[in-house]
Length: 131
Image (cartoon, rainbow, N blue to C red):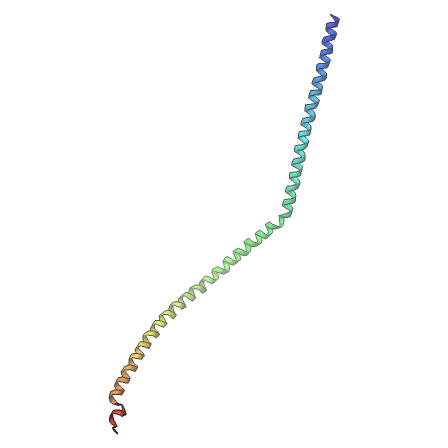
């Protein structure tokens, strides 16, 4: 029986050693994976900090542009009144041109009547004179 117990003890020691090697290998592999993940996370963190540092000023630029656009909108609203005034002036000029055109036609008509009356009262000299 001693040989059997010794064989079982030897087999148990070998099994224990094999399990110990297996668990050590698994532990090393898990530690390696965790370290790799930590390194990747650290790299991502450094990249994020670098990107944030490089683009930090763009937030200020965007904010400044937003303020500039708002100021332009306010200024353009003040031009609306002038645009309305210009439109009103253009409409008045159009009406004035129509009146001037009507008056021009009236003057032409008066001139034609005056010529007609003048020609009736003062016939041309060539018809009175005969040589």
